[in-house]
Length: 476
Image (cartoon, rainbow, N blue to C red; front, side):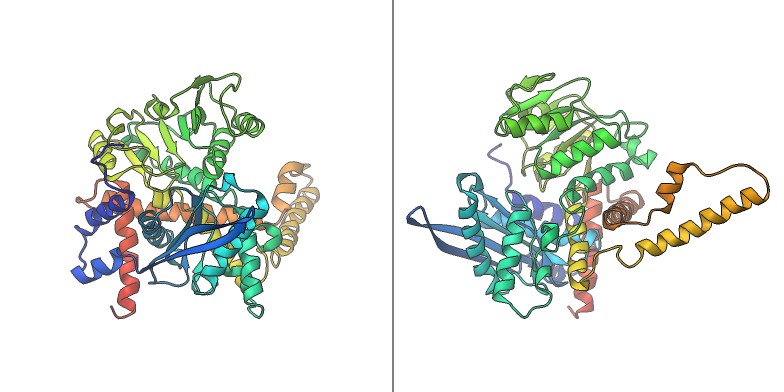
């Protein structure tokens, strides 16, 4: 990256400042919303392989305008206080934008999880959780983590079990963390949620011809050519859904050890199977061109790019060479503030991270509600829906027979219509609705104000305005 590049935290602050400059907020309220309320740093020891190893972890709380606060825990060697505080700030704005009733938080542990056996990771995770739990930095009513880069359902199951052991009388213990396996109080659709949200965000964007034209594109999502950077949980799901359900051609994939290119589109599941069989490597995958400098594919000729891995991958060193007219930020902070300015000047449309990857926190909200209500979605109404729909179908078919019309409903349609909504269908429906409404709130500001010329600024204005309203209601 360019030596003049602002840090991730500086980028978030610069984007915040750009938005509040056109908002009618008092200086004191601007500062209150901007600053991170608190950051806890913990250094703890775990005996592994006959020695004591010391680990450093963080948990930042950016805003408590609503509680509990919400935000994932990532495991990566690059974790540091500035990064965690920047991510916590993004969580505040993200939750406000999609109207999830949480403040913003984030956590991280400076560790390479690939260097440890599963039982060692469990020891480390449980000790980290213990340090946070005893300070109420994991609590169903105060601070609710979730998976992030380097963590997943397994780590969340360890954390919820650790919390339950330390709070044996808390009936809502399972709500202390989201992104859990189903057998630990999780919810269907959570693993896919962020990638599914990216898909729904793109679908909503392409429903608006005026917005599509602003990106110098035309038509719908089908047939568009995409490059996806990062086939982790977010990128893999987004790429699969877009290619199999929306007829998008994923022509390029960027991974740690290089990239793949195919003009006719890549079979995402085949690529994932290859990576699983070859230690995460894409090299040697048949039917595609291997590109050693995978990052160069960000600059390829395509309709849109999906950066779905690390922050800062599009920066001052490559922004002027990005040819895609549309970028959707599936990762947090993949475009730096400096690159953002260059891309906006070029006319590139950016669907911002705080909206594009909000599927995870949205479905986490549904999981939290499920844990507090102690009942899965669909359990009360599914069979009632089926019974009501069956009454209508039977009445129509009876009328047809009585009138001698001789028609009947298609059996496939009838089976689909009669089936009541299960938890997964309800989760996807709720996520789709959330992504549509959030986009429309951004779009209203984007097209309705002369001093707003991009979606990121619009997203910040919507989010900050909602956070400010919460603080005012508290008397600030």
